[in-house]
Image 1: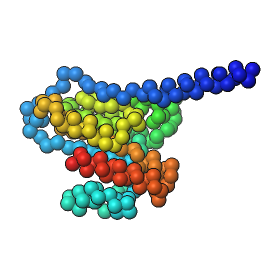
Image 2: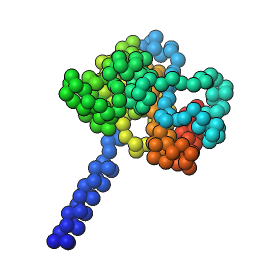
Image 3: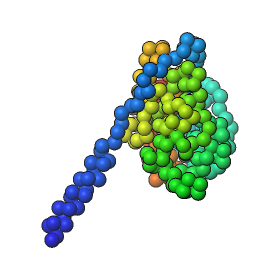
Image 4: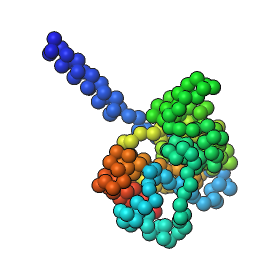
Amino acid sequence: MKQGLSFLMLIFSLAIFAQKTNTDTAQVVVPDRYNSVEAQAKPYVIMISTDGFRCDYAKKYHAENLLKYSNEGVQAKDMLPSYPSITFPNHWTLVTGLYPSHHGLIDNYFYDYKRKENYEASSRKTAEDGSWYGGTPLWALAEKQGMVSASMMWVGSASDAGGKRPTYYYPYHEKFSPSEKVQKVIDWLKLPMEKRPHFIALYFPEVDASGHHFGPDSKETEDAVHSIDHAIGNLV
């Protein structure tokens, strides 16, 4: 009996391992989309989120590139987040301009009494269902005006919220390093002009995860800050 139980535990462990290693990391490309002539003449905009990046992290951990770029450009003194000040509601607010009370994404996990359903950020079934997301995200606005867009795992970008998915996007997973994400953004920017995205949303969760798991003063959080700083340096 003990031997049989061990064998069953081995099978269970292998099944869990298989589920963890079989993550779909493939890019999704919506076919037959091209920049209009007018769109090709527009600037390129890359909107980057380093989730959970506390306001003092760049100075605290000497993020060389981020400090250099902020000193050369424009920086805000502070940020007033939407409420609740957590990932999914705030990222959808940033990309739509709506408060959570208006776009409907009021938490990472919540029960909708009208739908009689749960929304779960970690579930692809709900996270990629556009009916949960109100408002028009910037990539949908761009696409509707003849401008190709792309998203590297921004909240809601794998859904059809706003009526249009980005032309290029990746469903959320944590298999890519920050440097690998940046390389894929660079690859997008090397596409022919008619196919090259002019609006790109880029999301980094590493600093947020390290801060939650190990605390803001940990070596892990410092390493995550440097990893993001290095990746953004390569992008620039």
